[in-house]
Length: 266
Image (cartoon, rainbow, N blue to C red; front, side):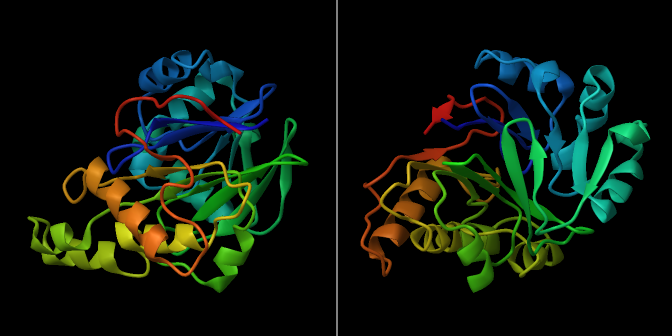
C-alpha cells in the first residue's frame, strides 16, 4: 500500500507527505515547521519521523520551512545540485549542514527507506526544477506541480501511476482579467510557468488506466482559481478527452491551501 497526504498546497506554500505504512517522506517544505508538524499530526505522523525531504525547486513557497525542520530533525534533503545551491542562498532558510544535503540527477533513481524515487525534469522558471515519482515494487505515486507545459516524454514517464497530485494552478480567463501585473501574467502563462485547469485535465486524461486510484489537484492560485472551478474543469476535460474514461470514474480531490487533507491510500 502507498499513501499521500497534502499538508498544504497552493501559491502561498506547499508540503506533501507520501510513503508507505512503514516509511514516509516530504515533498517540499514551503510552510512553517509548526504548520508542517500540525498537519502531519492530523494524520498520525510527526516531522522527525520523516525519512527525508525532496525539494522540487528553490521558490520560497516550497522551501520556507526547510531549514527549520532539517536542523531540528536532522532530515536529509534531496534536490538537484543547482536547486540545493539556490536554496542555500536564500537567507531566510538559514544554514543546513552539508552532511544532510544530497544532490540528485534528473532521471537517476535513488532509494529512501522502502521506496524508490524517480526525479523528473520539468519546465519551470527555477534553477533545475524536478517533479517526483515515488514507488514500491507494485505501486507508484506522482507529485507533479510547477510546470508550465508538458510533452510526450513526460506523459510516457508518468504512465501507470496509482495516485497523482497534479497542479491545477489557474483559470486562464481569471488570470487574464485579474489584477496581476502584465509581466507576472505572462510568466504564469508561459511554458516555464504554471499548469492551467484545462491543461491539467488534458494531461490527466493521458495518464488514466484501469488501476488508477485517485488524483489530488494542487497548487491552486488564491487569486486566479477556486476549488469548485478547478474540479469541474478537470472533470470536464477528462470526460471530453480522447480516452475511454470519464471524470466520474475515479475520485478527484482538491488540496486545500492551508489545511491538511485526509490520507489517501491505494
